[in-house]
Length: 235
Image 1 (cartoon, one colour):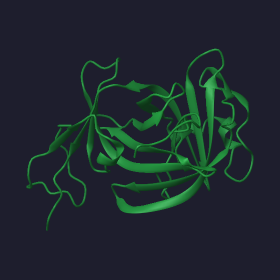
Image 2 (cartoon, helix red, strand yellow):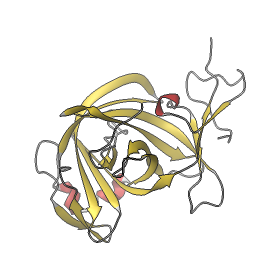
Image 3 (tube, helix red, strand yellow):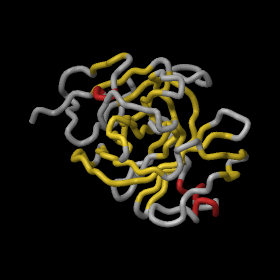
């Protein structure tokens, strides 16, 4: 993950996905609420299957994810909209997995990332995606582009001062993603920049790809995670 934050590429629009997190020291291992099922999922098949403490390769678009943050009053359920594997273009061993998830009760979007943090611990971390409507009001992001102006080494936004993490400015990655509405995999190039709050611990990631940008803010690590697998249609 450079959780680094990253910021993943666009999982909205032309197949992009915005993902990010923790620095370039990451490597991937690869709810019970009722809702309409995505295409290919059978309503009348067997029971839902719950997997506690899942590995990334056990999570797919169309599943539900249930987790509980310190700020929550109980478990919160999210729908998995997309999954992605990201690899540092200069280091094939530096690879991580990320998932775009949306609250079932609400429309807030997050990136759920499994990565090795700066203390060499493998953790799940939740990142809040900054809505495009909000990005459109912030001129600092208008100047950044995949093949043009790089993100600045320092900037002020969201009420904080940020500085690029060492070695984490505008580096190349390869993103392979698949979505609930597009099961076939798609691979594209992106560039990521990871920021840390000056004098603080907050993390921000920016991901740029051709004609797109994604920005996310790290929220917190997640200790308890459950994936709910829906039955797959056999007809």
